[in-house]
Length: 138
Image (cartoon, rainbow, N blue to C red; front, side, top):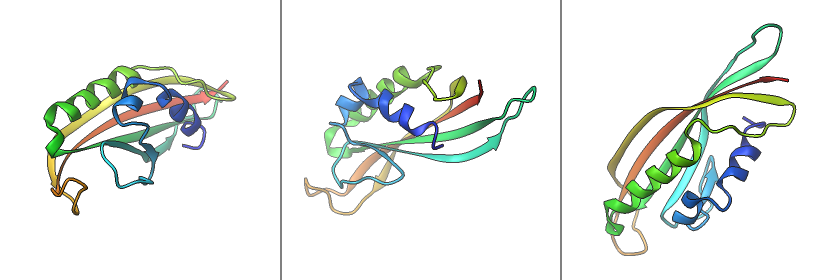
């Protein structure tokens, strides 16, 4: 994941999804309690060594969060903008060849209970989007 993270972070910058969440795109944990936001992490990583070239296939989950009081359209727009950005994208990786970045799954939006939010409510929408990233040595 260490090789993918800088490329994912760079792809987020100045994108529509980045603007949707006012720059709140985080790896592992959110640095802010504010919504909306995106948090991504590695679910699994499997060696993918083909024809004497080392590589890896990594399952990455992007969690999208939005306050329910903002309306369902906000989370649906975030979902659309994230998939437009990452579906079948090619990330520039140092010393590696990006073989594929493909969406595997979308779950949600789901209603979830959260601790008290800034607007006095406690309900959020949550959507999880999984991507499989495969890369090999050049």
